[in-house]
Amino acid sequence: MTLLALGINHKTAPVALREKVAFTPDSLVEALASLKAVDGVDETVIVSTCNRTELYVNTQDESGEKILQWLSDFHHLDVKEIVNNSYLLTKDDAVKHIMRVASGLDSLILGEPQILGQIKQAFGDARHSGMVSSEFDKLFQHTFNVAKRVRSETDIGANAVSVAYAAVQLAKHIFAELPKRSVLLVGAGETIELVAQHLKEQGVKHLAVANRTVARAEALAQKLDATVFTLSQVPEHLKEFDIVISSTASQLPLIGKGMVEKALKQRKNMPMFLVDLAVPRDIESEVNELGDAYLYTVDDLQHIVQKNLENREQAAQEAQKLIDKQASDYMAWKQSQQSIDLVKQYRQKGLLHRDDIVEKAKAQLEEGKSADLVLEEMAYKLTNTLLHPTTLALREAAKHDDPSLSRWMGQALDLSDNSSDENK
Image (cartoon, rainbow, N blue to C red; front, side):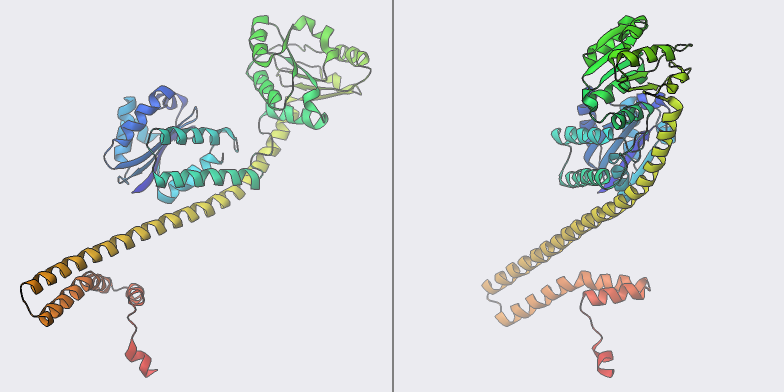
């Protein structure tokens, strides 16, 4: 059996194709059973996210042709389209790949942690469906441990690599007790929604959303248990907030120096942290002139993100070394298991031959044949049966004209050159 990984991801295929090969939760059980029914397939796990679809298969088909054909048939696609936009990895390359994916080294955002949970879910679904046996169980449990070590022993996930996350991390540095702070989110688009998600993860409870369209603000506020304002109400309520994060499509600034200055006086000069993620700007740059106002723009955060990305790249190199070592350890374990299986097979075969010869000898004795002759014949047959495959192996080694192979077999069979030893 060979481990095989067939995948299509954000690096190899456009979103239009990734959508076509994705598996919905409803279709996953059927897909797992269908894939395991392919001739030569023993174990299967299917990982399907917005950025990747990957099939992990323990199979006799090292070429992967049957797996490629199955994927195209299941989704009713031209197999050539899949071949041209996919990658196929086997053995130790496949092991390293699954470890890289689980550790966030192959993600769109380097080091993102969500993929590990998605792979755990995929493995759980496959095991629950009876598609996983001992070998895949060992592989994926080992992979989860490796991903955990990468997360704890390197800085792969230590630094912000999105402006939304960077904004929240910066706020956390400025305000020691972030969960107790009040936050005003200006806008209700995708960026603000991502900021809100990070704030909730940090335990912030006092949130408000201000937007031009109240219905859009209410939809976001409902998820956050937040208060809703219109943009025209911002000057009235600005004094209530320690942190203001803004990202709208406005062509003119919405928060001016005078508005912030007034709010600071009402706050008795308690500091205010403002983040402007909009282009064009939502907050006048002159706000930075105020002593108790700390204004950061999207450009400021991009510099932080870029530096953090460089740090993650360095951490990724450390993580790769760890993965290479752990993948090597897993392959060594797998090889040792195969050796154990070979030894078992060899011993079982020898015992079967022994039992067969002994039974024939007993039959001869019952027939009245001389015990001496029976013992001689039994010894001859037993010796010949046991030595025959070894003799063939030695002759085959000689044909290859490989001294190291012949020497290794000689040592393995304890065939020392007594004559040469005596002459020394």
